[in-house]
Length: 301
Image (tube, rainbow, N blue to C red):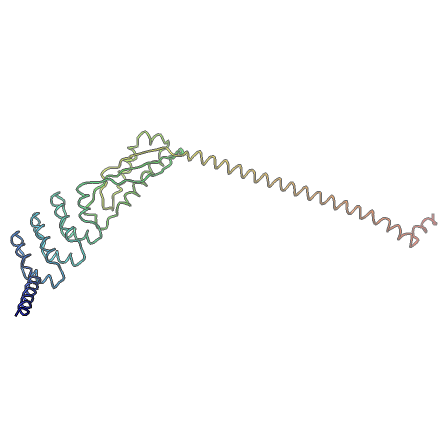
């Protein structure tokens, strides 16, 4: 009798667990007591759609308590099935609502599915933060190198988060603006005396266009004098000119040596011909004696 009783109890408990799993009554009761109107059968069908009812109910309760009533369970399920971070979206909507930011559920889900942290983006939009631009080196017209470090205060632009460029674009554009401003200064002292001129010119160029941020301010945190590029270039040019002059002088010397050697060779060749001619005289005399030309000439005389 004991074994069948234990088996019966186990079957009953398993049935209760299965019934509670299929019909999440506890979640439905929780939702009803918090003022969230949701159908029990909707929770049941979520199981078959592989959507966790607990996540949907918790999200609905949080949104309801925060005064956000325009989100339906179908919208939440759709975002979850699209591999979105539903909890981050709900929290971002709450932060945006408290900060009076115009952010809809559709925009929030689009930002989330685009791969951005929607909650962090909304927080940055509420509380601006500083982007540090690494040391940027520019050269003024007089050839003096200046090294500037900038701090850019930005905040997220909710409307441009999807498709907008990120922080690296901001850094690159600010760096380009700093180089351009330094490059137009006729004397490096102009920039040292008024570093705010860099900020004004860079801000006037609308560098945040097409990015996911609004630039609030650009501050030059540090400005140092580097090398005298103009003097270094002049020294390098003088060294290059000296090397060219040395090369030309060496070329002329080599040509002179070659000409001298050629003259020596010609002189030696002429001497060789004279020696050869002198060596041929006895042979010519000997030949004349043999044929009697020299003797006959004497008899005739």
